[in-house]
Length: 262
Image (tube, rainbow, N blue to C red; front, side):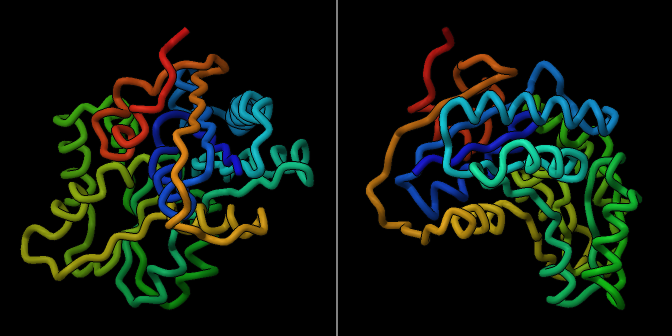
């Protein structure tokens, strides 16, 4: 079993870790685009072209499923990816976890990139899945970039700025960018300051990993014999995991099996 993941950068690490928890026997192909990151400010056409390039580089390795571990790419590129790769290669997109957050009760805050905040896509998800639940969209300028660089000071500043925009009565925070899941504990700590009630965080990594297995017709097998099979592709080049990935537990867990740069 082999599962590929694509993203602009290291935002694919949480989903990769979730796949490994469900199926430790799954080989992984991680294909990202550090040369073109960030994708958020790019046009939909450019995002689509870059996502297709990442997917094609991953498809060479004949995976059984492809996870689009990026909210921006899922919004803009999913139709093109599916048109080119399916039905031979199932393509699984990433959707912010607004539905489970709203189902647990509100109020809810959705942290996302400035490009996604207020977008028709996100507003549509809120209308479909959080109707009647007080929901606040919180833009997080610079947070994904700071996480990508593993810049702790900039990450803390961006998290603090977003926390200041989050209403005091919020009970759930949806992480609307896959990069944010790498710093979920920092986000939780910042939001729960100033006397806020206990806040639950909702990411998408676990759900997208489970959906990939369903699309493959496979069952979770957390006790399966682990494999160290890993391929890392950076803007079309096979390489090692980027150094910034090692700042996060998800990246360090994969580092021992990442190939050396050629």
